Image (cartoon, rainbow, N blue to C red; front, top):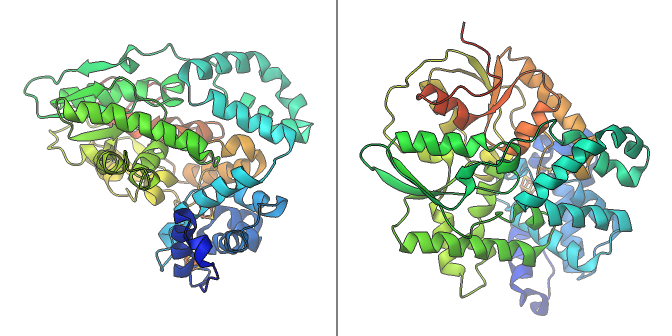
Length: 436
Ligand code: SF4
Ligand code: SF4
């Protein structure tokens, strides 16, 4: 694609990067067919190609964002299916990240939209605040229908509906410290405890630590690590996202320098995609560029790391049929497609892949709160395809997808690592049907 940026514009490294990306696009439109918002809404401006044109126009003319571009960029799930499809290697992720930061700097959103985004950014990344908010949401659940009647309050109705009926007790595992390997120590990793996941489902990290310890891997919870920053990053709040990234880079670098790490294990693929991008996000910061690149290179999804280990025979062969839902951040963001399915098969599960596996379930961070109608349509489509497999349960590797699919499915939705932990001698995950 031909671009028309001035030398002065290209002096800005963010614009220069976006220009490089734009020039790669040959506007073939292949990406439209796999874009969930284009498939759902049928509007070219809600396709990757349409959004690329809008971003190009905004950046080239150096103008502030307007209502039209904000509408279409806000509807993008950042699922990155377009990147998997694109034959020209267009890095849509970095382009839309730049566009979102530009929008955040130049566009004044309506009051309620600003308020809702502010609440999400101030609550979700902080486990104590999130836990308190979930308790409040339980009380507010009867008002969800009333909130639905006022368009500006729909995100709050969606929040109330997504809040779980019961909130698990906080896990001691989330506290900083080391969890020793059982038997001969074969490796040492750090685990990202995360922000929303340990509140919604602490059993995911508990199963990860237990499984890795039994496989001879020491797991450390580094002091000072926090939210990966994905949530604010996708809101265009660059400074907040970079502050989270720097905090985690510091925490993991201390562990690297004191004992070494074979990997930084991540159990939520949404976080993994962002941490693997820290090297890019902090490339212009001389104090962090190198450290961040080192951290990104060490970041591994738990299934990606498990696939590198010499696994023993499973302790039990569950024989259950599992529909594997590949989160967008897993298959498109991190290009991890084979390992989770191979591990499940090897552990004795019969793995089925639902139709339209490339399409997002509609979770996408806070998308199911901010865009509840599109999100619900995508969820219903996903659940229909999953249920058509005839599987007894769903396995997936991202807490957002677990919450989203569980809100519409009659099958149990379980994190992949909990099923693997069970097969290799751990506890049976709640809700999993008995083996017949
Ligand atoms: S598939 Fe790639 S090159 Fe083709 S329009 Fe989409 S982004 Fe551009
Ligand atoms: S990230 Fe997903 S929703 Fe956004 S343009 Fe690409 S395919 Fe469409």
